[in-house]
Image (tube, rainbow, N blue to C red; front, side, top):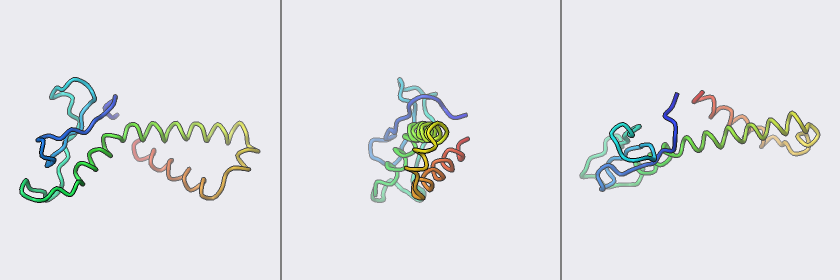
Length: 109
């Protein structure tokens, strides 16, 4: 089971060399969920922004998971309760997105 609540990305050292993902709550050591450092990164090397971008993506993962789960509920409801509408609006592209959402959710289930 993952840590509940909103997560945020925070620069550990104010120089964008390391990042922490923590609960969006008052700061405590117990609030830290993960630390992110770029492999091979040094304090002397240039910052290309990947560490920050990766951390923000990880921090947004709970919201992304919830959005995917909500989308699946809506899509299943349309499929099960309005089959004629489903047959009208579903395209191969939508089926592909459906499969992608299911696969993403299954990675954390």
